[in-house]
Length: 294
Image 1 (cartoon, rainbow, N blue to C red):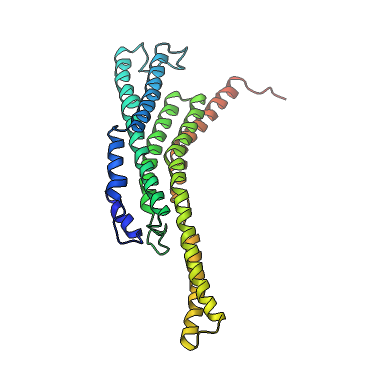
Image 2: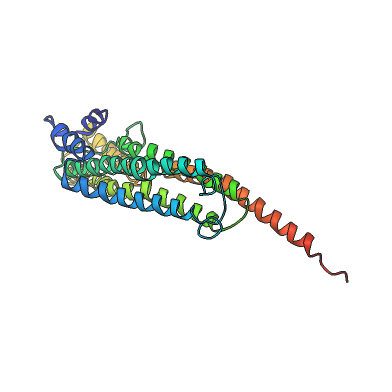
């Protein structure tokens, strides 16, 4: 709801941008699973989540064979296994699919709404906006907060697995791949959906500035201007060059440094611990098989 004001600040028309009809109401219907597309997506996410839950709990029936280790959630620990069933069913089949479903709806409908406004030339980018993103940083914030949260939670899970296993195995590679998948799913793909509209806004703004610059230059070349008018026209043509440079600096990938900084920070603890485990194993191997004396 707060984005209504942000869209209004970008508006170049005086009428209604269609926020309620074209964005809010369709988004609410999507999140409420009232549309066919919404039901298909949620069913797909639920199916993948249930498959992950079923495979995990099936593995724990055979610790040391299918599952690599015998932990508190294996079948040998009845209470732990039962609790893990309840917890993982909730996480994998209910919570995570619902969060992904809502997040996809927010990103998709905002991207579609933005593209519609750009196509109808109802909004324009703001070169001197305080957010340094042309006034559209609020859209990237819709992506950034969930992405950082997902990376943080996934990073904690990765560290927990590495700390529990205390050895370098397939879980280390799986953890890195999982973090990369979260980065792609929560940041790269949603930003790609917005990137086209951002590029179009920048191109339209630059084209409009260049057109005004050409009109001033044509008047100068035609010799129609004298005195102060001539000096002003010359100043405008120079000023417009500075504005174009300002528009060109508006990032097509907003908050790129922040998201990759978070990505690195969430990977570092687990990778450091894996490196220490690897060094420990190497030291034990050397201690157990000392090198022959010359």
